[in-house]
Each structure stands twice: as C-alpha cells, then as structure tokens.
Image (cartoon, one colour):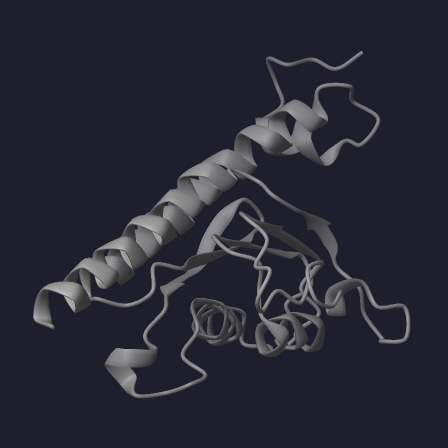
Amino acid sequence: MVDFNTRSSDEINDNSDNPLSSIFSQDNDSRFMLEAIKEALAAAEEDEVPIGAVIVYKGKVIARAHNQRETLNDPTAHAEMIALTQAAEHLQSWRLTGCTMYVTLEPCPMCAGALVNARVDRLVYGPADAKAGACESLFNIVQDPRLNHRLEVVRDFMSEPCRALLQDFFANKRKQKKASN
C-alpha cells in the first residue's frame, strides 16, 4: 500500500504499479501543456505563429520557447528546435533522455527528427497538423521502428485551446489582409 503522506506526487507518478499514477501524470501533463500554451500566446504577441513548447526534466521545466521564424528570419526557429537547444544547454548534453516535450501542435518533420536525434523520451502535443505533422498525420518519425530511438507519444492533448489559438491568429491575419486590400 502506498503511503500518500510521505510521498510526493512525482514519486507516486513514477510508480507504474500505482493505480493513481495515470491521474497524476495527466495532472502534470495539463500543467505543463498550459506552460506551452503561455509560450504560444507570447508568440502571437510577437506576430509569430502561436506555437509554444516546454521541455520538462524530473518534474521541472528546463526549457521554454515559442516560434521565432519571423523575428529571427530563421526557417529553423520553431518552438521545438529552440526548446531543444535550451534543454541541451541546461543539461550540458545533446542526449535529452528523461525529458518530455509539450508542444501546442504536432511537430513537423524537422522537429520530429530533432526529437528522435535528441533521444527525448516522451512527446505530448495538442492538435494534429494535417499539412505538416510528422508524428501521425503525414509521417510517424518519432515512432518509426527503422530509427534508433522512438518516443512515447500522447496525441491530441488539450487540443481545443491550442487549436483555438491558431484559428484566431490566422483569422486575424486574413482580416488584416482583407482590410489592407
């Protein structure tokens, strides 16, 4: 029997035999996805496509980023890529084993490949991306058995608020474009 008075939720969450572990995991997933959503909001404030990402290691956020392609004039400045670089710097290693990435949209092929190469353990993302998704929609790079590493994936997590951010952003862009014509 688990003594809940002496164990933290992280310890309970680490015990796969514990029937409450999935509840604590979902609570943590919600908390960290909200952090990614905050990053997406920061992107929108900078007139960037509102995608945010955080990386968690041992229950703590070690990296947070949002899209900065327009700001940096860099086609690789996706939220996931920036967060991976930050996490590697934090851990002083390119191997990000033990890490979970939370991102507000299904990663593209570039980002999915980087997640595999970085040896990230787990990926939690919001809505699927039918036009560029590489974790289920168009490809499944992160779980391809031909590659040397595969991630555990939680798909379609908290999709509605993530999707709403993107839809609102692009609706506003269309209105701006129409008003300027």
